[in-house]
Amino acid sequence: MAQTDETLVVEIERLLPGGVGLAHTEGRTLFVSLAAPGDLVRVVIDRVSGKVAFASIVEVLKPSAERVEPPCPYFGRCGGCDFQQLNYAAQLKAKEEIIRDCLRRLGGIQDPVEISLIPSPDPWHYRARAEWQFDSVNQKLGYFERGSRRVCDVAECAVLVPALEEELEKLRALLASAGLPEGIRDFQAGSGDETVSLSPPVQDEHTDLNANSAPVEVSRTIAGERYHFDAEAFFQTNPDLLPALLRSAIGEASGETAIDLYCGVGLFTLPLARRFARVVGVETNGHATAFARRNLDHAKNSSPAVMEGSPFTKPGDVRIITARVGDWLTENSRSLGSIDFLLLDPPRTGAENRDIAGILALRPKQISYVSCDPATLARDLKKLLAGGYSLDSVTAFDMFPQTHHVETVARLSLK
Image 1: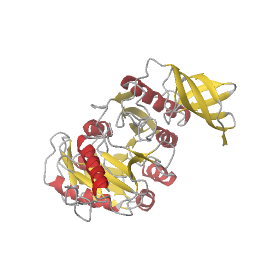
Image 2: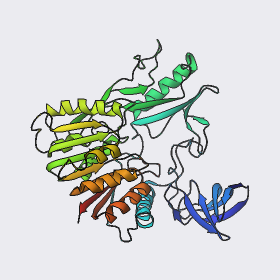
Image 3: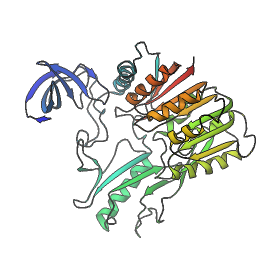
Image 4: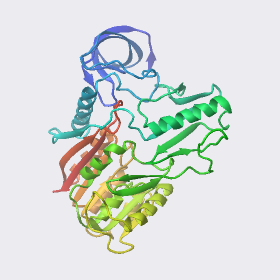
């Protein structure tokens, strides 16, 4: 890609997947970062690839009605948020359009079903998971700067839950006084209902940070189920939306057999086990499956407060498998019998080709696809629809306010 310092005046037409603004000028397509639809802006061309140019805003000449002043002093430099320039209604509108665009352009779904988008109860202070980068040479702690591996030194983060903000402040205080241990490049942090887990844990006589060699275990109660995890085991970042996410992903589904792919610590496995006689959860990460088994043991001895359903019938009717999803599907697709319900919640990269092939070989009666990336969701839905399924509903959840990211649940049924 060619580098340039050319400047232009353009009007932003709309926002695209990835959160960038779209503009056209002089026969070229421009992707403009940190823009708002309707902005009239002066931009500098950062790089050019054929007839596509990537640009940054130099000056907002006429702001869009949807533009607001970002409250975070690091916005634009920190790579964490890219939607703070939009009012919250505009953020939700943009995310719905992003999902619809991906379904049409990448999924070949020309007439998508109605998309329901559930807003976050709190557009700020919602993030219960974080990864902080540490630059030991320049003694900086925070997030990577936008488009680089440099660390933006962040003293306060507007989207963290209070408990994680306090943990960040403790780390910064330790950095200023005694210094942080050598060799650390980043910290992972997760907040539970009562405490915080930090990896790697550090200690100092003047702080109350974790003093163990392993991260402290925390727990959260979601829809009546109690989940144990730590900073190294993935758990959804916006706990206020999780009850609604569970209801959307599982709905009224019940029956004999359910499969939970990429099950993690068992977020969906536990409520599924109260609805189905037999449940299998599959997850590659052994650290996560260890927590899933513990969470399952706890659930067998408790009753859900919100997600009502059948109690567990006998030990062994729910299995947690540590394996690559594609490998497990290949080895077991012929022996599982009839599958009433299959849920998958893959990473941002989506499901692998062999995962989709394995799902199609199973022929589950219903599929619930939970996705954090509309583009890979649309790509995978195209394959499932071609394999004999119909798209019944699409529900989105604003799990990540102030960013272009969005969580989506697509429900499918066998034709």
